[in-house]
Image (tube, rainbow, N blue to C red):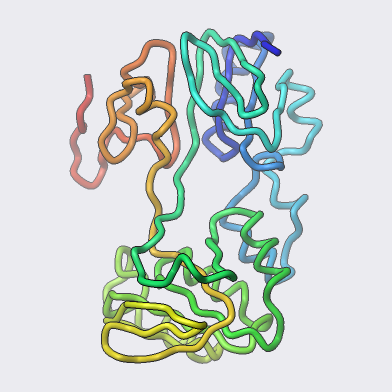
Length: 288
């Protein structure tokens, strides 16, 4: 089955929602098709830890209600992934295609899986980036669970915070000398670490998981930690495959100009997977 649409947006995050708002300021009638890989409307991913803490629910996590998309003429395809783009068509995993005049790819990022010996044999292994991850963890964890989180960045710590009170023991391990090293220095990290320890969360720094066998993780420094649940939160990688496969200019992310245009005509990119002006270096990177 083939459908025609003026605009197609791939991705269910805040970048996609911003695109819808932007289109409707200029074009009130052009049909928009939104392709969400997850089986949900666009939602705020940072809230998944609050869901585990019972501070919110999946409905409140959504940026807009179902009515918003109907009122704005947006066809929403939930739980369907785009497999490739070719000749101004998006090919979907269900066999359908969506023809477009202009497209935005906002597929975000994917969790990086560290190369740890024995990791592939761990059954109760999770990431912590989506509401599906949070729902799966909610189902797997109980008051007796021993949770090991690899990574003391924002994602790992949000997971630890969300699971606090749900699990029997939580351990966070990171190669860095303190938590959130990309954001905090050691002085600023200290009071945050104190708070996590007061919550009963064990923190292991300047060490890394070297191997895993039969529910026991061994670190490079020789420590051993038993666990029932493993969460890998060591970083993400921009999900550029859709555009890289059709020749778009990429480095770490897909290169865009100041209008968020990629090197391919009529295709734009935004969000975590787009790479452009770097405010930290105050210069443009690989602009055309």
